[in-house]
Image (cartoon, rainbow, N blue to C red; front, side, top):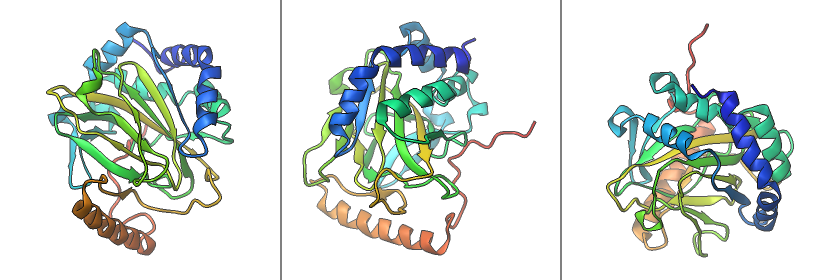
Length: 274
């Protein structure tokens, strides 16, 4: 059985091998949306095991709205133990420290609650509209500063869709497109200008992703302000864009009245007390 620590050692080894390249990529992009990606992160056999461990979409929570359409899970004790070990490998202190060094961000803290993290699956036609991630953790004590996305889909081709889009110049600019390539880790900055999206999946296959967020006591930019997850339409979706603007304004208004939301966000890992 692969453990969090054994997987973290492997992640750390590959990150160290590509550390200089990753730092150069992040430094070159951080004036917009800082990001880097590392390919061939884990041995292929292990990644295929992680892929096979994913639950069926019907065993996950389905999020379907104008904003998004995907399947998610954060209550990891309900699924194959390997998935939990894989998620928390990215929260290993040495892994966090190295990514902190690559990105030049002080005081990075992983999220043991998996607030909006965990695992996700997208099937044909599913998508994630352009959006800004929620600026804080579930208790609004720390700033969300990095998003880690690890793709585990064997033989995933570029034309299958499900690409990550980064919009460093806003939705009137052009996106940076990062294919969700097998065994690829993408690390991206989250701040007031980190607009990003996932293009619709084009094939009858599941796009599986292991997700983590890192937080910090301080925001990445002095101009950052609290905001809820904020969605927009793609440039060709003018009517949808106006609807999503109203939706975001209403949800932001509610959060000003209710600091932690009207209802508790269910997308967290509620661990059993030992």
